[in-house]
Image 1 (cartoon, each protein chain N blue to C red):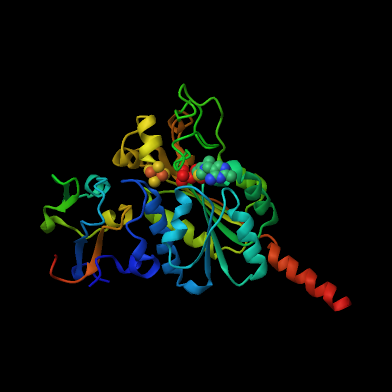
Image 2 (image 1 turned 60 degrees about the vertical axis):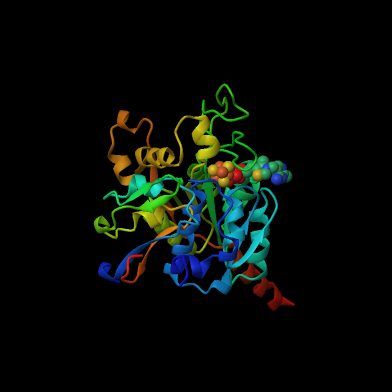
Amino acid sequence: MSKENLVLRLNRVSCKGCGICVAFCPTKVLKIVEDNKCKIIDLEKCIKCGQCELRCPDYAIYLEEGTDGK
Amino acid sequence: MSDRSQLVDKYFRVDNLPHIWCPGCSHGIVTRALTKAIDELDLDPDKIVIVSGIGCSSRAAGYLNFNTLHTTHGRAIAYATGIKLANPELHVIVITGDGDASAIGGNHLIHACRRNIDLTVMIFNNNIYGMTGGQYSPTTPHTALGTTAPYGNIDRPFDLVRLVEGAGATYIARGTAYHTLQLTGYMKKAIAHKGLSVVEAISSCPTYYGRKNRIGDAVGMMQWMKDTFVEKRAYDRLDEEKRIGKVPFGEFVNIQAPEYTAVLAEITKRVEGRL
Ligand SMILES: Cc1ncc(C[n+]2csc(CCOP(=O)(O)OP(=O)(O)O)c2C)c(N)n1
Ligand code: SF4
């Protein structure tokens, strides 16, 4: 699967705000915001490496085939 | 459109999510790694049985969409042995904690290894009894703190890899929740292995172990794994003093030996032939 077709998805309902994805994202795409959950703050910088998905204990963040980036 | 990945939709009982694990508990990471391993092996989900004991780690069985059995504390391997003997066609995977597997269940573990029965044992090792509030376990390091070791643990810990090697397991690997891709690789090989395989998956309990031992929160525990665990080949090249405080991960044993249910089938055939 080519990376061009992948988009980053975040399900904020599942997020428990542990911050692991934020800490280990190599390009600092993510941030824990006021409601203590993760937010995508800079999607442009996402290199689709999938590190966040691998280590999200709550299955809240993942890459999926698609284009809209929502 | 679902709001979960295809992998999670396929292998999890999504109605039971979100799970009960604390924020940043690595058990969720290790459980996902297991589904990834199963997916990459392309196994028939109906042929997979997940058997767990009791503990936060053992709760994983309830979230997985296979044949699952959530049993009693320490006894998962005994139930799994029965299932495998009744139907050797099944892939029987045990999910157990360090307490479940090596304290109350220690005898089941070593004797299953000795028999080399074709089970895959995934030990989620977070160095503590998470579910009951942070009591020390047989893998809590010497001097580490637990609710039952407020002045530091006076016991010495088991090295699970060496324990199961001594007991006769024929595939043994150690991975960590931080080194997730490698962990998935070991899980794949363990499931495909014919015989008793053990994967020690280093997990983390930020709520009790991390907080008590000032290793930190969820992120701190992941950083600790990253800093502490070194791939075996790199570890072997380190000088003696550089090894202090480091723990190797990787594949430790991968050998073939007669498998218990196969030996039993053979002897049954031989004896039945005489009747
Ligand atoms: C026979 C019996 N003894 C004790 C308990 C209490 N108990 C429940 S879980 C547990 C330890 C769990 O630790 P571990 O297996 O390491 O799993 P974790 O919760 O850390 O994932 C204990 C002692 C029990 N449920 N049954
Ligand atoms: S108590 Fe520890 S092991 Fe149990 S869910 Fe919380 S972090 Fe995980």
